[in-house]
Picture 1 (cartoon, rainbow, N blue to C red):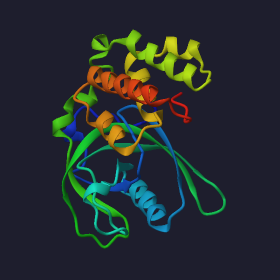
Picture 2 (picture 1 turned 180 degrees about the vertical axis):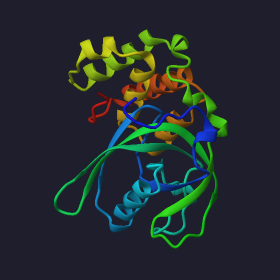
Picture 3 (picture 1 turned 180 degrees about the horizontal axis):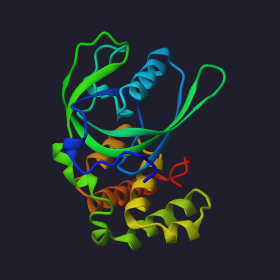
Length: 222
């Protein structure tokens, strides 16, 4: 895992983290997410995260079904914390960062803060298994997942690196395909909230089959 910090369980993480609401963004434990940060409030958020030493950002989706204020949308209750493991300055005021997923969290309370970015008190306790790399890999139906991927690629006339896919462990394969999937916010949230890796793979296969039945998607899964 490309990070200097080692997290063994929920107790190793802070109770309060900054959150970055981003529609369609899905981060999962040990997954990598590149981000282009340019809004002033989020540039400050990155500076503060680096300064406090934790270097953690909570990725979470806005919840449009329960939002009334466009400038401060409601949030889904579950997100995933990522640690800043790479950072570069663009030279024009932006940060180019990469987050490495640590563990999912549940929001307990959004805090009233002076910062322009939002902060929440969270718990990682419901997701203690996220700290165990490759947990549940043997339960994944890898062939069903690969069959769905083949069908998706064929329907959309796409190619992929099959050698890399064949070499990928089940956890890395399932989570990478989930994170890169072209599906909507509700589907991404379902993938995030899946109780285990097997369930996440099953949701991914089911959603892909539904999309194929509709006539496919123009956005590549891989």
